[in-house]
Amino acid sequence: MASIINILCVILFVSLMSQGSLQQQCEIKDLKINQKPTGKNVNNKPEWTATISNNCICTQMNVQLSCKGFQTEEPVDPSLLSKSGDLCLINNGLPIYGFRSISFVYAWDAPFAFKTSYSEIACS
Image (cartoon, rainbow, N blue to C red; front, side, top):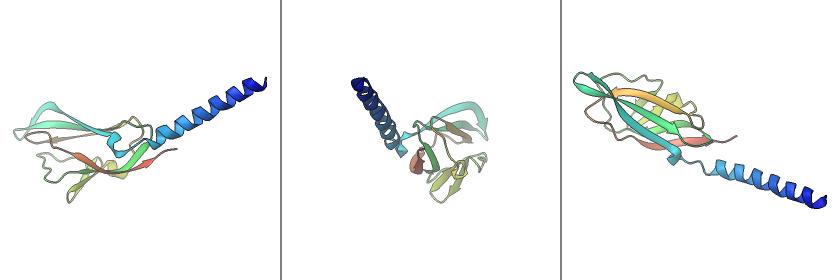
């Protein structure tokens, strides 16, 4: 009986450790940016959908993208993307929960080379 309890304790311990290690592995690189054309044109520029996906179990908030030189022929919803200098704040700084996405559309000649530059990671 004692050996069964010991085995259960080891399983519980390993389970708790693996959950903690998953959370600690979340990084800014878990934010992925994918873009695809919508098929529409705005002022003779193709429209693009940009999707920022959080491919991590943890929440990421205050997500900022490097967006120096970003231009668009149509306004972007400022609650989804607001530009300040060379940085763009995503989702008003609100959380992008684990395995969720935020998308916005813009129109320009080619997809813009957005890069993640900052996020705060929160694991519960």
